[in-house]
Length: 231
Image (tube, rainbow, N blue to C red; front, side, top):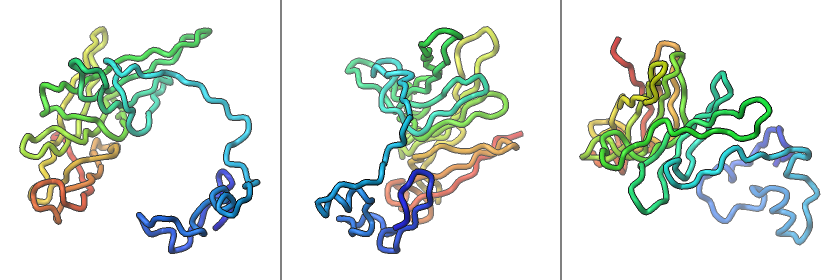
């Protein structure tokens, strides 16, 4: 195997490219694992020197959600946007939250968390358990996916759009662009974020459904999809 130095390209032998092969062959393990197996200490560092971590926000598991999914995205002002899959309080809660973290004002250190949208547990048609990350178009609208919810016969997830409120108002508006059915070749259970091109066309993938699915949304091999909003 090639060097594992940060930033280098790692070339794996063919045996290491086979998924779900356990235990790993010796040539598939990193230097530290190989050294440990041989009773030696790996000399090659795995942590870059001089890197400092700062926790910007710790989720409470209440209305701000729990189980962050996918990457965060950053807008031109430096604010961060992301999704949480649910919450861990035993009382009523959202089935997923889209949040915004606003950077601190000059000379201050605290970021500000705002819940942009909560997927209500009382309305599965709007989606449950957001997955992947978010993307923002030129108008400031956010696009994302949920793994579950949507079509009641499948519960196979949705692609959604969140439109920002008019100036001076606070509520974002959700639009379900597509509810997956897992039937007739349609996908099911999206697990990643979407992308949006300059024309506003949305592209993404699903983990299930497709031509090999029997209509349950659970036994297919997945799809790549395209969504076009009417003009």
